[in-house]
Amino acid sequence: MTATATVEPQVFDTDLTARLDRLPWGRFHTLLVLALGITWLLDGLEVTLAGSVAGALKDSPLLRLSSADVTLAGATYIAGAVLGALFFGWLADRIGRRKLFFITLAVYIIATAATAFSWNLWSFLLFRFFTGAGIGGEYSAINSTVQEFTPPRYRGWVDLAINGTFWVGAAVGAVGAIYLLDPDIVGGELGWRLCFGIGAALGLVILLMRWWIPESPRWLLIHGHRDEALRIVESIEQRFERAGHRLQPVPPEAGLRLRSRDHTSLLEVIQVLFQRHLRRSMVGMALLTSQAFFYNAIFFSYALVLTDFYHVPSPDVPWYILPFALGNFCGPLILGPLFDRLGRRIMIPFTYIMSGLLLTVSGYLFQQGVIDATQQTISWMVIFFFASAAASSAYLTVAETFPLEMRALAIAVFYAFGTALGGISGPLLFGALIETANRTNVFIGYLIGAGLMIGAGLVHAIWGVAAERRSLETVAAPLSLVEDDRRD
Image (cartoon, rainbow, N blue to C red; front, side, top):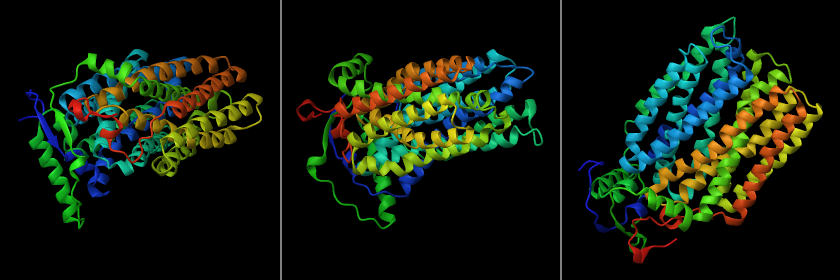
């Protein structure tokens, strides 16, 4: 039976989810994280390139973009990510995670390669839209899959570390831009076009890395493919046994009684989001909206602040992105284990509120004109050490606090609406504020971002779920759980 075949609803008992959760960390998990988590590297690459080549796009004899056009391109990329997340997230819950890995990556590769051949503003915007759509689709399918394979005691750290690789991509994009935009090496019109080719080349490598990854056994169980799910779990267990691990038997009480289903209706999804888990929905929306505004507003306009207020030459902008990327990468990596040890309800509010407070101080110093470009970069490096962990925890939260049957779509919904509210409005607002060439106006934008982060931290402190070291099925009971066994 194929993963997309229609199945008759059946009630059955299974211990496969508990068998996955009791596994130690092993080579299987490491390879899975590398093959799937590298998606964030692509997103970081794209976002960084958009900022790094901003000056070159404005100088391009064909494109001749204004500062407002550059921020519009950023907003267009985000709009594509929003719609792509919704469509592909819905599709991932219906046809499976694995097929979406390849569909969304193919969309990304084709679109980012096409960006290199843009001939005017509208073609550039169109290709950026579809590039974002591919990345948005990746977020929903991959976040859900990684969580469904990762043992509970590692889930927080793994999710944060994976999201932190966004900044490895940012560093790759910055270094690539340094050399490709250098007029003594390539520069000019060809330089920025070759920059977008980096993503397409990496995408082809990632395509090969994913070939061995199996479908999520949890998804297969719900959709009635128990034999295939059993085969995959047994294959994973055999890997560990061959590596010398002695796996303990799963206690009977860890099993689940489920009812298979072909799909989950949108009406049921709405009921879960706005009735059964309304508070979780409010938390997810607050976290993702605030971090989307915070990140996209500041990062998409990062190059413009450096060039317009600090008069940094556009070819030198990537050098300032490297330390910024370092702070963002180290934050989730260093703070990540604390999300499993101290817990979500301590670390998520802490990182959100700290980010907001630090941005307020940094914004005031910028407004007063008492720091130079280097000091500004150092301050952002410190701010985003905390903000990167905060933003990563937002994806962790929505992925682990909603039922399996709608996990990919839930990620997509909150990513889409949060990003639409914060990710599109932020770059457009900051683009307009920067155009005024008034530091006070830009400071007001920083205060808005800081206020949103502090507010989101308080929302999670009140309503957040302590999901650390718990199985996904105990954090959010499957919709397919037989009624007598249902628990929240």
